Image 1 (cartoon, protein in one colour):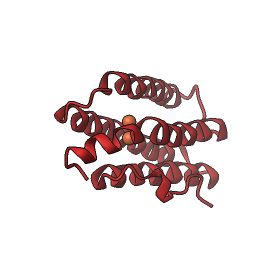
Image 2 (tube, helix red, strand yellow):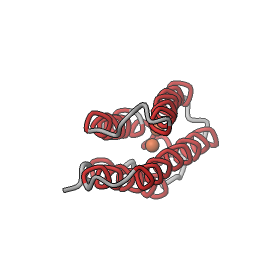
Image 3 (cartoon, rainbow, N blue to C red):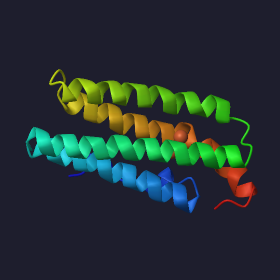
Image 4 (cartoon, helix red, strand yellow):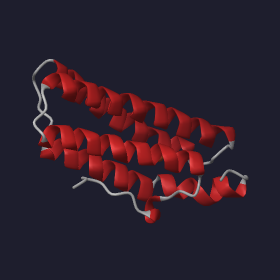
Amino acid sequence: MPLVTWTDNLSVHIKEIDTQHQKLVKLINDLFDAVTAKKGKDVLTKVLNELVDYTRYHFTAEEKLMATHNYPDLAKHKPEHEELTRKVLDFQKQFNEGKAMIDLLLMNFLKDWLVKHILGTDKKYSSYLNGKGVS
Ligand SMILES: [Fe+2]
Ligand SMILES: [Fe+2]
């Protein structure tokens, strides 16, 4: 069973962003599956790297979209991305050095962060950006 399930209530009504969020859901599920299947460190490293890289790609794309359209709450939104990026990069370093494990606590943290951030923060730009013709 997947850890995170995409449902329509996660939609921000912007096609490009929904596609990116769906990919993040998939990558979290891929990591969860790899851990559940007790895959080796090489596989876990690869999937974790993919998730980290794609998360950073998504944050950059989302911030660029908000900046392009002068979204007034970008300055409040960006620090949430920055904090998660810091935490994830720190975890990745610990994992690579053999000082941390990918466990259920981490997986639930990633899941909760993504869902809460989309529902609580990303969704706030929906109507503003839709009003600028972004859909
Ligand atoms: Fe965001
Ligand atoms: Fe997002």
